[in-house]
Length: 279
Image 1 (tube, rainbow, N blue to C red):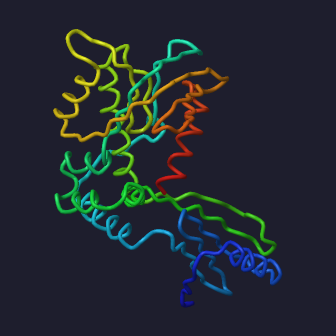
Image 2: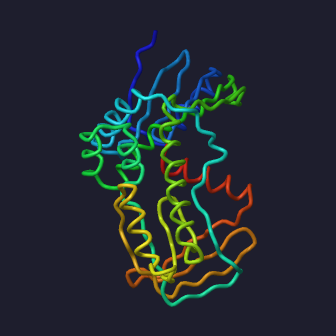
Image 3: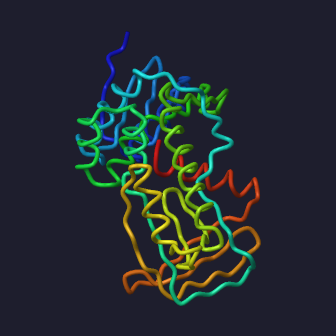
């Protein structure tokens, strides 16, 4: 059996290895993930790895994986996962001020509150930067795209393999959506839209409570921490398949596209979020 060679991921070098196999007319297997590329054949067994993520990301991932795999959860239907919602009443809307609340460390907090990770693991996750924390938890849903190539470098077959721990990550997505949807329900007409773990709303009165108070009480009841932002000059323009949202945050013009409830669009944005941020 060939000894596996490890190397830093470089697209140019990977392509050179692929071209070499084509020249030599050697079939090979190409396996790709977000962080790695692997080429295996009778000629070589080489594993290219990105060096972007610091070691603490992998340490955090191993801690989370060790904890969550002690618990059995039901398979999550990823086709029903929700990453956003919106309550725009027309294709044109403007408000001088709206408000945004983000659930802090949403996925890590859900895993901890639901008893799936230890306090020590939760503490470690909260100490590392947000994007590293997302990457660590997202690794639970890692997937491999495997291509069998013939002697001419043409694809004979392809398949996708998801990590056996994927459902733990998708459980976080599902639970986050449940929490956000319940918050939106409590806000009533003050709710504008949500994006993953963020809620955007107007400060309208509901009974004797403001929207901000409603959210604070809801988060406290569910043992969630949050961050708060004021967004100015918020304007919505309806497009064919999405709403273009423009606003000023921290004196900077910001744009966000919120899809309309079209299944194809939802699938595109869901696939993008999973692939871009979490695999």
